[in-house]
Amino acid sequence: MGEKKIGVLIGGSGLIGGTIVNYYKTRHAETVDIRAPSSKKLSIREESDIRSYLSEVKPDFVINAAMASLASDGQMAYEVNYLGPLNLARAATALKIPYIHVSSAATLSSGTDLKEDDIIPITPKLSNYAKSKLMAEQTLRLMAEQEGLDYSCVRLAIVYGAHDHKIQGFHRLFFSIADQSMPVLFTQKNTFHSYSNARKLPYFINHMIENRKEFSGITCHFVDRNPVDLATLILTIKSYLQLKSPREIYVPYLMASFGKKVIVFLLRFLRKFGLKADLPPELMFLDNFYKSQALSAARLEASSFVDPMPEETIFTRLPNLVIYYLTRWSHQNLITTYDETLDFKGSVEDDFAHNPLKLLESVHAKSIGPFPEMMQDQ
Image (cartoon, rainbow, N blue to C red; front, side):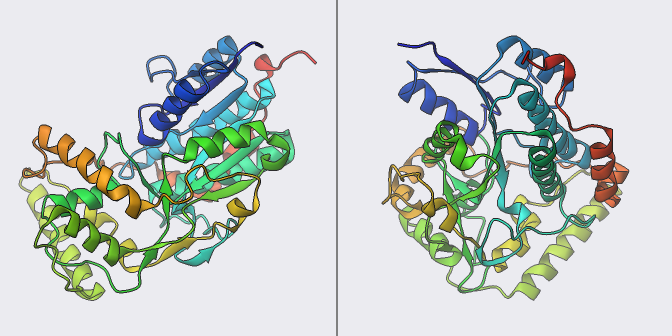
């Protein structure tokens, strides 16, 4: 048996990262030594950490599954979702190794049958999360063209899976139904979204690493073949939980939007008296509940990758997910208290908030090349 390959994964504590680590440890333990350094050993926000750790370990590939919270301020989103991936890519270029970058459908517009190239332009009004993810994708493409970076970008939609310690995305929706904090349907009929199966993703990432000629420089949507109607999913979860709510009453967008504005006004009013309160996470992304975003899986299906679980979808996984999360949230006393909040900070780096293209160009002008001191001998 040959020497083991060494892989470094950033973001191992999350749902995606943890699933990838578990995959390599259980299915490729004899051939791959997967390393998932804690933030104490390697902080993605620190360039020096990235350079020193990867110089010492000299991995055969790097996977980045780290992401800042959806509600992070501009500084955090910029450092974790943009500068971190940039510096990982610079290190990978210097070491001449593949770099797998996990991105998000937040870089796409709303609509149906969205292709990989249907990205939205970078503008100041975008959310910090979308802005930083778009900047990262653009810089990685430039590095592939100008610096010879061997990278692949995997773009995910709404991720579902077990063992997620955070309550966000699909799990936030599930939690809202289980906690009975959704009395009616805050969506409209025929609103379709794509979903990404966390359990299948490691198989695809490993396939990309083993087939660099096919996947180098490629961005690919990793989503289930068929998008899902949001109202149907909500009502299906409700039936599994045997609850009376949410009622099958569709709240018009204008009414829901007005309610959101009232809550925002009340929260601002309370802050004047020193009472800190944040907008419920469900309301932060209210617009998404009323707009379809269905990603095309054509490129994925046309590739050499073979789905290891072709019949598995969000609906077939629901029974197991219901049991897992209800047990977990009950043990944590979360089901009835509804005290899970995200940390929102008010300060945003000025350029990132108001002129992201200028910031992007300044980084490109400074350097996106490989770290010279890490360059291996030819």
